Image 1: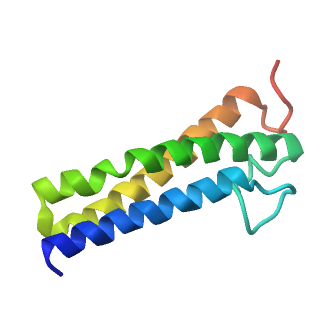
Image 2: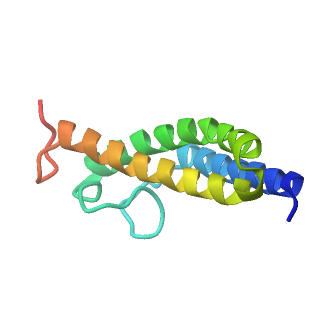
Length: 118
């Protein structure tokens, strides 16, 4: 795959992730489930933690996905032969950051049983 093709695939990957983030934000899961939404043991404690986690994580994911469009551009300039891989790895790191920051947010606002901290 040449450098221009890698750039296009990387931008397409970012666009796909952005669309996915938008769908998750605009159509959040209404009930706790194991298929769709932000699913961790902390977020699934009760309906309040579920709704809070899904709202927070989807907003953060949407923001990170917008930022992720810088990855293919940077990769194209610095390492054009590895641009697609660089973009996928970068996006994966951003997704892990969404998990980290959402869990941190939940810890700050809810106790271990899922009760809101006032």
